Length: 414
Image (cartoon, rainbow, N blue to C red; front, side, top):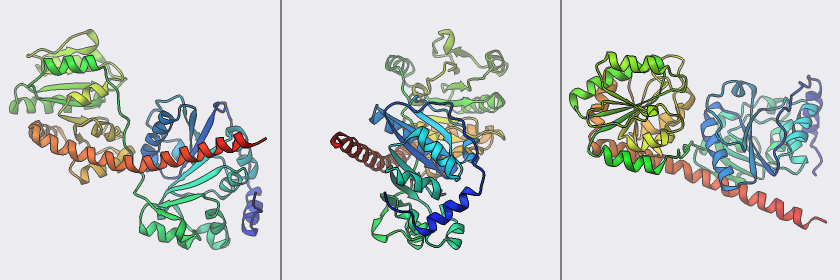
């Protein structure tokens, strides 16, 4: 354990003057290994949650603790699907708060994403021999305020990371100015979401694919009640272009089934209700896909998918990488703040298109229902997913190697 530098000792003394906010630890530490991932930038959350899910899939005895500043912790929208993944608020910088946090969770490894460094937490983890990695650092994650009044603090902190990777050349230069050793900064692509590979029942997929062969299909996924009229109006427009087109309408979990079916009836559309055991036939114009956890099936069925919770103000969209990973062209509305980075990436390569109303949605569906048009978008989306997966794979390998080495060291200890 290295001695603290003078600047770190001074920072610690200043941190003691603050208040040690009490933090409740209602959730017990999970058994086995724990990897802590600190996220300083809200736009990185989709990618970090994808990384966490892949880590626990690859290492069954591992749990992942996603550690967030208060402003990010209070504004999470995506559900956690694994019992091995936890989200918690980061402790304050008072030494007692940091010590209590680490005494409870006892992480075996820590990844620090983007920036927003917390010297007290980093220093205490290093003193406990918790191996630290600065991952995909970005210049915006380092404001320089601490460095101005404690010029050696940044250099001290940087020296405590076992590895450092930067998102681009500008970020690499910023890290060097803070005292990171140039030879230790690894180039890395941006940490990007890859999407969960949503499952489906193979028998349902085979049966529906055979039964609906030849029919153009589009999906409206995760649709809020206020979006029903837009979706149904767009479908009426699409029917004028392709009279055999089928809409698979997947409502949000809080939908009112009588309201939805009433809206469909009022538009003169024939429908089948999936939860009632209805099976779409040649005359079905809308399949109401209202059972939970079946989006993996519907993404695989649809040539083009509109991702809901994105038309009306207050919506946040849903993860487009899930759709891109399953080979569907993507349409979305203007309110996708929670996944803006992912939508921007997909749109920049032609894998996703924004629509603003029923008319533009109808026109887009009419154009993209032509197989080769949608296939171009789907292929571009798959390329984006694959690029993100390469960065994820490098991080996963790094975590495995560190944890394996830690287990080996423990085995050699008397």
